[in-house]
Image 1 (cartoon, helix red, strand yellow):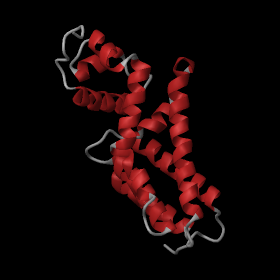
Image 2 (cartoon, rainbow, N blue to C red):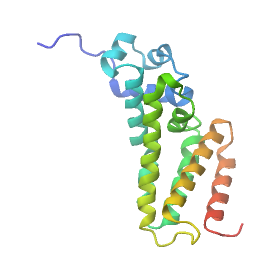
Image 3 (cartoon, one colour):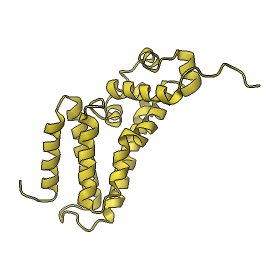
Image 4 (cartoon, rainbow, N blue to C red):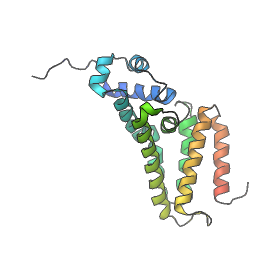
Amino acid sequence: MPGGRPRSFDADTALDRALEVFWRRGYEGTSLADLTAAMGINKPSLYAAFGNKEELFGKVLARYLDGPGAYAADALDAPTGREVVERLIHGAVDLTAGDSTPHGCLCVKAVQACGPDAHAVHRDAVAVRKAGEAALRRRLEQATDLPSRQGPAGLAALVHTISDGIAVQAAAGRSRDELRHVADSALRALWGEGA
């Protein structure tokens, strides 16, 4: 007979609530009290179900990539290089400045605002960013419509830099409309198109 009481909470719902708290406050800005209050559980239940704060963040990061952040992997299926880039940049605007999500990007916040005690969280967020850029580079290597002055690696780095900038600006309060204009301007500039 297994020991302990059965869970009195839905783990998926609790994880979704933790995701929102981390997304709004960042890893370092989120306390265990914030998490337990949002998740509707006590600390022993949090530890039993999800591990410590760092382990919980790892689960949240995976959920973010499979949920709200899945637009990035989906964009790679677009038929042309330009459409891939357009979906990524517009997706970054929609995700980070949308009405139904916290402003900013969970991964970008974790990369930017983690102190030395959160080295593993920072490392994991950087790894996610690098993997995304590498996947984009591989996809762009297959494209036949890249701007002549950009190779796949350079364009992938540039697109990720633009997306990160969009996330930072969204977190700083720029509106979705303003960021959509920036995204469209970036796309025109990348492909050498007129205003």
